Amino acid sequence: MREDAGLTQAELARKAGTTQSVIARLEDAEYPGHSRTMLERLATACGVALRLRAEKKPNFDLDREVALVFTGRCFEIQAQSISPKRDRRTR
Image 1 (tube, helix red, strand yellow):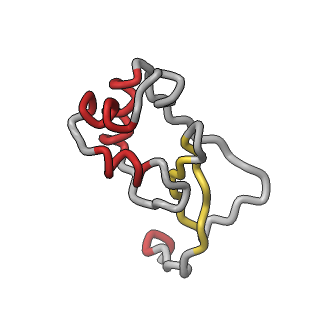
Image 2: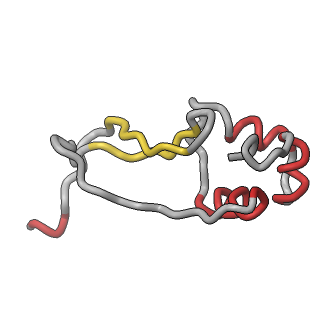
């Protein structure tokens, strides 16, 4: 997204009101701390719209949490295992 917009990390950071080190961290595929607010700021700075879409996947495990991961060219949602929680609504 950043490269398609022709921006360096420093230029994107300046347009989004953050620092180059934050952009570098967000572009790290292992970084789990993406916020929707920051993604909206980055998308706006790159001149694109942020669109979130949820769709059911086959064999999806409900005892997993989801993380937004930057894969180099785009953000991708990935599931990670978590310990099962009791659903209090089913009592």
